[in-house]
Each structure stands twice: as C-alpha cells, then as structure tokens.
Image (cartoon, rainbow, N blue to C red; front, side, top):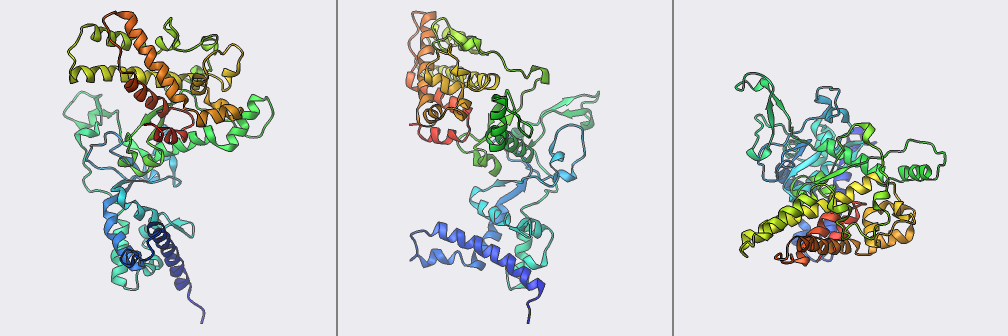
Amino acid sequence: MEPSATTVRSAQFRAAIAGFIEARREAKLKDKNDDANAASKYDYATWLADAARRVSQIQAVTHVLKATHPDARGSSLHMAPTSLPRRAEIGSHLLGDGYTEDVVGNAAALDVFKLLKLEVEGKRLIDWVQAGDADLQAALSDNPQQAQEWMRAFASMVRHEPRPATHPMGKQLYWLVGENPHDDAHYQLLQPLFASSLAHAVHTEIQDARFGEANKELRQARRESRSADGSYREYRDIAIRKLGGTKPQNISQLNSERGGVNYLLASLPPAAWKPRDSVALLKLDSIFNKSHGPFFWFGEVRQLVRELSDFLDTDPEANKDTRDRVDALARKVGDQLALFGAAVRGHLKPGWTREEDCQLPECEQLWLDPERCEEDTDFKSTYIFDDWADQVATRFARWLNQQLRGRSDKLIALGEAEMRYFARKAILEVAWPIPLQRRATEATP
C-alpha cells in the first residue's frame, strides 16, 4: 500500500526536525558519548518539549527597541513589510516578502529560532507554523493534543502585543509641528524605532558591493579601463554605528551577525560624492608630523587638544575625577583618529599610496589605503598579519603627548599605554575590511 501524500509530507517535516536535533546532539556531546543523561535531552520529544517551553523567551521582530539603548525595557515590534503603508521614501515597506526577521530575547534560546528557520518545500517551519499546517503538526508529536500545544507555543515567537510599551531609554524624539501641544496628532516623530530588517538589508548590500566577487571584478575592470557587463556599485563616505559594544548579541540576533556594525550613508547631495585629490597626503612623512599635520586640522581635533591642554594646565588634583575627564577627552581625540581614517578611505581612490610621492610609513599606508590589498598580495599579507593598528596607535599616543607638551611646560605626559589601547580599538572598529576586526580585536592584550 502506497503511503498517503499527507504521511509522506509529515515524514519530511519530521526528518528535517530530527536531523536538526541530531546535529545539535553531536555538537554538544562531542567527547561525551558515555553521558547517558545528557544524551537523553536530545530525544526527539524531550528536545521539542524543552524548545516549546523556551520559545517564550525570544521574539521575532522587525523593529528593535534595544538598538536605541541597551537598557530599554519596552516593546520591540514585528511589522511585515507588506503590511506597511506604501511611501515614496526608502523604508521597510520596500523589502516586500524577501526580508530577514530579527530575534530579541534570551540568547540561550536562539537554537529554537534556528530550528524554526529550517526550510521544507521552500518555506521556513515558522511560516508553516503560522499557517497552521496540519502535516507539520502531525510531525511534532503522535499525541494530537501535545502537537497542538507545541504549534501554539512555536507560533508565539511572532507575536503582537495588544498594548505596546515604550520606555524612557527608548529615546523616541517628537517635534511639535502643530499648534496644540496636548494633541498627539500635532507632533512629528523624528526618531522612529530602529528598523532592524531594513538595516540588515542595507548592510548586506553594502557588504556585497565592497567585498562581493562580482562587484570586485567590475571594480577591477573600471580601474584597468576594460569593458565589462554589469553595473559597478560603490558607497562612499560611509559611517559606522556600533551597537552593543563587546556584546552585540544583547541588542539582537541580526546585530550579532553583523558584529554590531550598522552602516550609515552620507547625508550629502549626489553632486558632493566626488573623490578628493590625494595631494594633501603626499610628500608627508606622517599624518602626525611636527607642524601639526593633516590630522591636527581634521574635524574637532584641534579644539579637543586645546580643551585637554587647558584643563591639564590648571594643575588639577590627581584623583579619579581628573583621570576620568582626561581619559574622556583623550578618547574623543582617538575617535577622531578613526573618523580621519574612514574619511580618507571614502574619498581617495584605492592604491593611491603606490604613488611615488607617498612617503607615509607603511603602517599608515595600510591603515589609510586597505583596498590596495585587492591588487597587491604583499600589501595584503602585511595588512592581515602585521600589527599595523598598534603601530598607528603608538604614533598617535606620542603625537598627542607632543602636542600637549608643546602648549605648556607644566603639562605632564599622559599614559601612553592607555592611549595606545583605546586608539587601536577605535581604529579597528572602522577598519576595512570588517571581517578582520574580530581577529585583530581578539589579539589585543
């Protein structure tokens, strides 16, 4: 007797789930084959029962509250892009059905989300759960009542709170645009909830444009003035917003996958997106040369150096408050160092350090012209394995002390080791390419 289509389909669901549980068992019980108690946790029914219990600890969302502040305790939201109003501006509504859901909650329960992301017949288990698929329900348990309870539990991962709650740390900013401050309709929301699914789509596109093989070949053809099929994509003057610090998983799952990196596009009219000439950085032995150099005149550097030196010139007491203020100002100068590197990389053509008039030390070349790695294998090897970030940070620390001593004979030197540490960290947070950050950061003492 031939098995019914329903039976075959239920078996497909069960096989996919059983395969996932078995893979978890092998990964968790490696070298523990004699632990019968631990192995029993990965029995099909036992594991699913535990997963159905733990699924309440996580929530599938598209808009994440903690991205605004990690201590926010309000509601994150799940808004399918197809349910959003169609607008002329770029927004989540443009993602359609091809969007990636984010997950917030207890990181220890993320394996349940991984289960529900398994695909059967081209759709995820969570989609079949939401549709109330009878074959999937039958595959969960031979006990119909038990299977129904587990279906309801797994469906709760995508939930809509009847009364969403905000939080003071949510920092949603409203601006009065009408006449009546007592009428909510007279306010315009300036800072909306963080659109995580949209941010992930932007991140994926920019990563592909920067590191994808197809765009890499088109970029190479453009440099060599060769004809090629396809459109070359480039995003300039990009800023990076880091979310979650050393624990990006505390914000959300997608934020963790991005290493906390969230790209911000330049708020500039298209006419301003033009590469600048590299002449300003040629014939220099360092961006930190004694006559201040280009870094000194960048952004807020000179104002911060002046503020720091003025404070130290008052001969403050050697206590914790003084140390905290000095560290805070020095860190701000270090942040400017990271922004300087990002600005140079965004404006100058890759490979500009090959020019004969480029006299910068190798560590500064590696920092400021990393995309040269695509054409120069020796340069790439040095970029990956040499500690150029520490060398740049050391130069920065010494330069800052020279600037301070040059303003007053009374000023004492700042701690070079501390300045070198946070300067190196700031450099790596916006270094290119992003995947190398983790290796370099892990090597930091």
